[in-house]
Image (cartoon, rainbow, N blue to C red; front, top):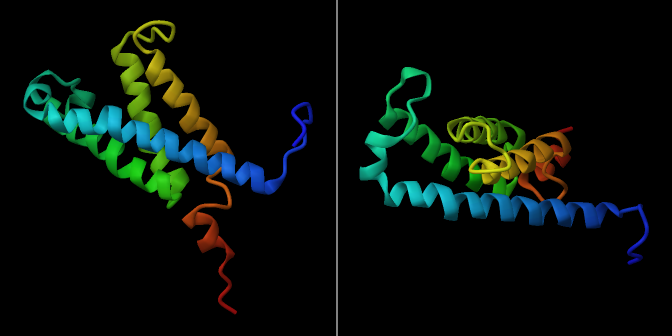
Length: 138
């Protein structure tokens, strides 16, 4: 592999996308979703009230996005669909921190960039989505 080349093989791209999905999804579950579950009692009264739904409902929606959608992202199942709640959750997280992307909202912004990138590029060939799309029924 030449370090100075701009060409990339499809296998290398697919492996990179798999690694990126594993990292983003795994870190989202471990650092954010699981933390919210552990601190559920404290957070359910302090969590940001999204669209007037109440802090408990907003917290449940955030946990669902950060855990369930991240698991589906890791496997590459319904990838673009599950990225939408993750993108919305990161936008809310950034907004909650005053849109300070060079301050408290930096981590949310980095996750947002990763999720938008995967939304544009797709999950790659090492995903369940790719396997489903390769099937032919005739």
